[in-house]
Length: 98
Image (cartoon, rainbow, N blue to C red; front, side, top):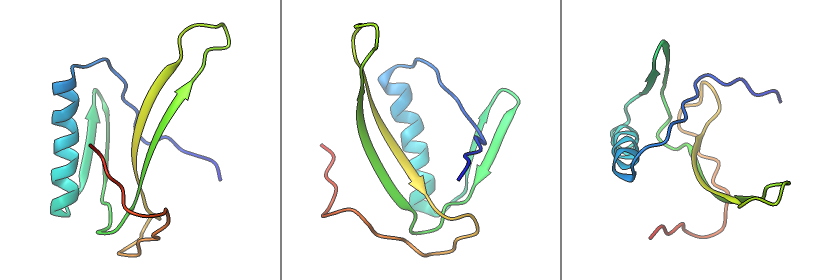
């Protein structure tokens, strides 16, 4: 299935600035509110259902030129467009983040 990027933002930030954005997302998800993402002239509003699929991924990407590897952690909410409350489950056990 082809992917359509609706919004993209990438910028170096302090840990505190990143935490503030993540708190805003957490508050909106916890409150059942829509998420509006804005940067410059770009904007998108999404309304996650009460039970989206939550994906956490840690990756190491190695450089083909022998440079240092790049590490990343990704947090993703997924749901079918137009979905109401139909969580798909998946994964084994409970997630712990410390």
